[in-house]
Image (tube, rainbow over all chains, first blue to last red; front, side):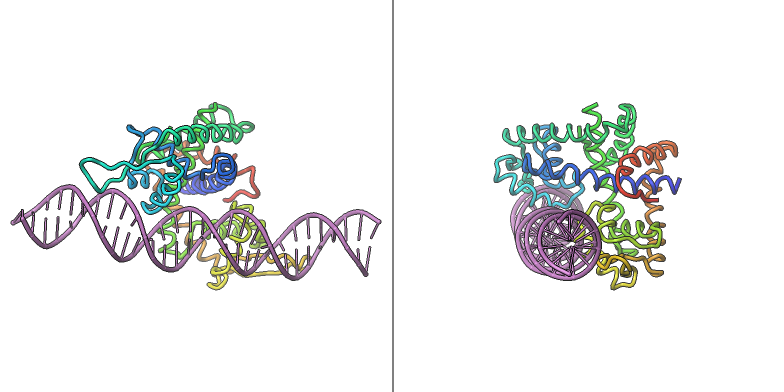
Length: 148
Length: 148
DNA sequence: CCGATATGTTTCCGAACGCAAGCAACTAGC
DNA sequence: GCTAGTTGCTTGCGTTCGGAAACATATCGG
């Protein structure tokens, strides 16, 4: 069990490095987004009012709050994200997904879907990919809201 | 299939962010290593002569060669890594694992194994972890030498 | 009401990385 | 052996990130 868990973790880390390399380049050149930018916008996409607070986003992305501040700044200037205050709590500064942003992330998602399909095309059966997604989902399930 | 592959990829990326956060702190405070430092040394650990060239390491870790140069510098000063020239090709500067380095990475590996076991302890059966490791292994198998 | 503590956000600083450029050494074709 | 192209490594520069600190606001206990 010890050895197996260790192996799973090491391979997960290695696999991520590989996938990030595969995805980030096309994502950047085609849509002008980083992988983390895309994940951030996808979290907004499925949020109740297309908005989330910065600390909430930080927890979902497993990054620091300061990173969220910096990530949202350029996207806000590009008109993909907006800023909204809370009526009750003046500390909160919600990040919102604009119409422009929703179109961009929709297109970016299609790119990601295509690349994801390529990754598994040859050596995985559909059932195996589903099993993988399910097993990984139990890891991410311990975190605040799951994607997709 | 498209949707399933996409889900698997997104969850893998999210899971990695979670695991990195979980592991890197203890790894740094206890052994003074980053996660990537540890992966680098584990690759050396299982290399034929405890040594690999810098470009080879870069490919295995999915980082740029310049990153390998910068990563090895402090570890070399700490005596964990060494440098060895090739008799036939004077361009090559192998990174070698010293005795000190071998002891350090052995201890770090135990920390990682313990944390890895914790991650899966509650919600996964042993078979499921093995399945996960196997499925992820097919991803990393497309890369130069697999770890463990 | 008021001080103490907690929470959300931003800014500053140092660390880590990729890319482009540069240098050294190897290889191929002539 | 000479030139041209390739490969391995390093350095400089810009970008991105985490942690500490600062600040504003909210909440709690008296």
